[in-house]
Image (cartoon, rainbow over all chains, first blue to last red; front, side, top):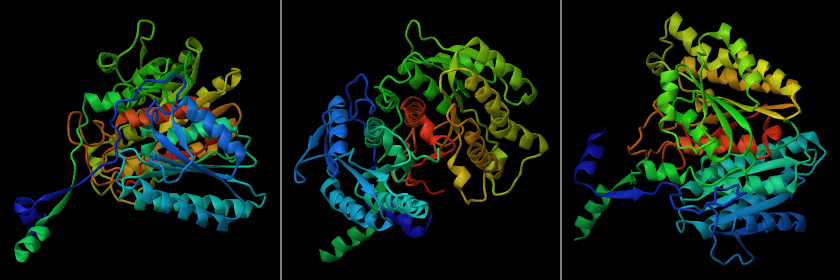
Length: 194
Length: 284
């Protein structure tokens, strides 16, 4: 250890950095995908699809997770469900993540942003570029957001994968929960390549 | 006064708030279902169930209503592990000693256990690391190298085709999960033999999963540094570290929940052949 560091530790004052851990007690819910850790929390859902909105609200109700309609309300989680057709569209998501992070920063011990991307293009090259861009974006965003105490993770799927909306929403719920914190910066690939 | 404030400001240093991995924290990460009862009534086998992540997986699967077969190298290890588990009247796990270094005997063992129990989930969690491997060179002698490779890699490549073949013959979709490691992605010149065995596991699953597509899902999960006897950190100790984005070591119960979600959350077939990186942005 450097001499300067030793002196600081000896006579200096520590400034504590908080760790990201959800150690609240939670009720046990049957048929939950979050271990009941989202019960009583609020989520702000960003989506342009009526089908996604309906499916997620049904899952949120089961988890006793309140879905907010107002961006200025108080919420612990943000879920972005969107379809991408071009690799250039991800910039809008990045901006949304940063805006939402400001809202969540330092307020909660269990704040999270989960991005679910449905890749809707038949062009294989375009689809691969979108995949890698989404993965890189989440990885970088997670590094930035961790300093604000916010977890950022996500998943993607594609139009070839006949994955039910219910399964996608269940996965989002898991990622938003305390058990999804370990996936900070990671994107789960639920695509046809499996 | 300004000078004093300046000096005080310069003397401040950043420190991560301590986090003790105790019974309270362990319990909070063990409660509630993460699979919507998707594991209820199923039977799972866990290798390396004598401690660490393996034991946490057993506890999680019992909690999810799953029947569990625990395997480890000796009955003594299994009984010690069993004493630390909580389970109901009809949930007692089955204990089966299995030495993964005896590669020649594994096939027979796997066929017998698959015949005796309706196993639809097989979790290869056993792993070993030699102290000498933690240095920056391959310091292992021939015997140590063979032991490490037997447990971490050869046992998996021996067991997976046998289990997958037998699962394929059943009507129920099977799931095999292997615990890899962040070291498979590390560029650090330490834990060399261990890292080689784990990157081998990652590539092996990429190759074999398509063979059983639609019948058996084969998935890897690569955890970061977990609080286990093999890793770093100890029960009842401070696990705060600045190595990952969460500022604390991963606790085994977090990994167990992820394994349960992959096995019973309805996503396994979409993840087959892939490795889930569960290390929260950890940098080694």
